[in-house]
Image (cartoon, rainbow, N blue to C red; front, side, top):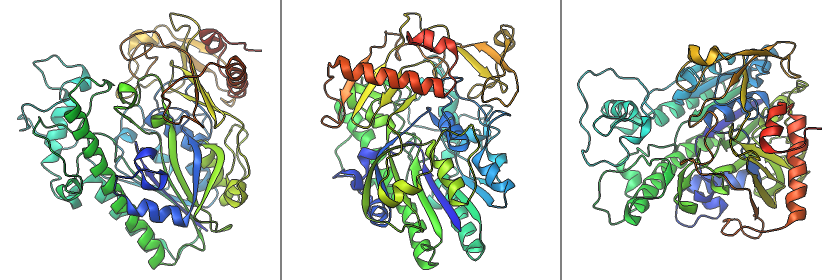
Length: 506
């Protein structure tokens, strides 16, 4: 038996035709839906990128204990468990966050890995002289909070890199799929392997080839704009519409390379013995609710209600939709079960075999969020976005043995406040560092992107999936609050998380 995971980053469910979008051109996603079980109630868990990937390895929430960071020494890693039990694991990726301070322990859990460089300002090609770029480009300074007379380092590096990937075959996504397809072709006659083929696209910046942009003609004579800043929608309508079209063009490029995987599975007759998972970590707000981004509050459906399509060669169900409530953390359990391996006791995800075979329910409710923000809960019909119960959004601490932020180590001043805690129930006897959280975008964010207090909100997403209006229903809110408390206890959430949120720990 073999398994392939094709993972896209920031793939919006509501921009895919198989989920009802009428204008984005993605015929291979429609083709995929006819060959798979399409999940209608799939949700993110821990956000954003690396917290989601930690869930993909461990099968448990991590946003209640720390923010963005590497795998911990006590984490159970699905690829490593497969590797240790005779299943060959290979990672093909262009996701540069794996190779920063906050992600450096993930790729080495696989038997082998290949990295295609150049995405989102990856510090790849060295150039002392400033690159040429459009002087009037929107978004070039927000990335690092650079002063107005300085370039954001990521922006500068992005334009250095673009000089080396002007042709499609030079772009990281094309390289990643080429390497993944090569792995499949060379190993198709072998048994017991797992390939994770993962591209950073369609994550911003929305850089792609003109042939994809030509599919979305529109009138626009404004400044260069393919990298939207996170925050409120504060630009002109034509600028926002233009960058939405740029996103759509990159989705179509993703669709093109998905089609190459489906073609190869057809050609090599792999459908009878190969599990196929196509997924993402989260979506993105493209102006909906007057917001742009994904790590801004609150987490609307556009961010957390994710596309997920799976082909299981055992049940061979295809062209059907499954309403079972599932999450990212169920995928490692699904892969372990597929290869006949038991889940570790700390893995909270549930194998999706029965849901794939006959729509068996999986979860009654799930939670999702970012460290220090709302704790959100859905039962598949309603979403409660629970704001912190204390106005200062404290107390809040990291619990970790790998003191790394996204692109930097914890500084000595942070470590000077360290206490020793634990062992916690899931740290396998290891005590951990307890570090007060600092206020950055990914580490204990302020109430919203501008520091305004978050509000608790309740939505009926079954009847109002666009979340245009809130509902008032004390009974539903109380029930989902109890679910949050239950799931936090099952996740061994620190006592101060209950205190921060104004919840009952017992």
